[in-house]
Length: 611
Image (cartoon, rainbow, N blue to C red; front, side, top):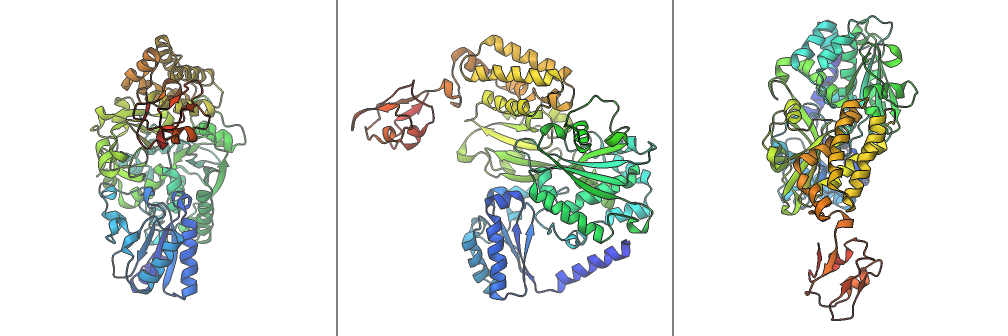
């Protein structure tokens, strides 16, 4: 059991330690992005080096995703009384030099910092237009230490809800905030809670939907890895609001770092009495369990998720009844995704008026996006609703690599649609995106440049949907396959203009007749690319050409008169499709050519062109 006074004691003790201590903190970005870039050996080198050198006042701490994934592995050194120094692209050898010169001698190693000026990440344009709410602790706190979360006012919102508010007060505050679900359609969170609250039942449930499966999406994973207690606290608040005593976090097994840190967080919260029986000395009980998903995209849909937790194959069912009335094991259930929950504690602690002070009237607050694809600054960004795409792409993302021209961005993964230069200045919120033929979705944002073929992009997303369809309803199971077959024909140069009409007809029928939201949105990438890039489809079917030079069946590699006969392309071709003699122009046998492009990449005279 923990009282509010005990929470304050923990926070005050930690604050005093930070203020009075001469401790140097070395923070290593240990989200999946950092780990995959090589952060683990960096962390070990720093930790072992501190021990070997006897640096008693130096602590090496892991943290979650710091945000700018393109610079991983990232290490930050915080010396009391001095500016934080951020090191990028760190490896074990660099870590040793950082320990020797910066930690021992007090001289930062400027050559490993951003721009060589010893600045911090927050000095960059990447961060200047961000407003962090859901990910405010990510990259800052140690996610495996509950005291750091409490130091950042963690669990004070739960205390406020339990000790100062009625369940209805909590629901009313969330309603007043205008918080909308961050996992897809943007349904009002407070309204969802209000549907479940009055239902009488011997058991109610709160489920955190952490089954993030969109290609290019890593928002929820980053929150779970970097700030797991924010989700636990929010689930307890939601449980109090609707009268639920049990919570489940449904997270895919492909997120081992997130699962590990969630387990640690749950155990720590139980040890402090912040989960379990009689929270904050009240008669409210709440506990949380983790359920691992096997990676089925359809289990992101709430009824399929419920079926999976119950032990059945993840397949959607008809609604109504809605989960708020009849959900997990037939009991009233509220399901919110990770990012939605990550906003809850701060709304309760700071008030709905604070939350509505940024964002737009119909979409208050912020949105977290996973910025990836053809963009210079890949990473995790959180921006106020209403920001324009131009600001995200060019000011935060710094445009496309190599000076390439921006072509489109796919928002919302396979459920979303592409946005082009025509709508770069449209304020981004739930309603505006729907108005231009897209949708917010979960927040994956994949940027494409002039070298991307939009027909191929549509085929990529549809290939994912076909593979991930649960197969329960015919429109999704069969309709998406037929659409994929048509796109295959088109990219192979075998399509016809009649195929384009068939694509539109199939897409319309699938949207209208599929059982769940995933099937209903599956045609979106095809419809949006047809709408904005119909000329590319026409080129594929009428001219049998791919303007972007991506679809292999529609391109040829040819050797021009600039060829010097050096034989490098001949020697590099994996299928011996190139013939010629030394110092004479070579030629390519188009029947043998694999369209791999190796010849073009190795030619030193730019004598090979793609047509």
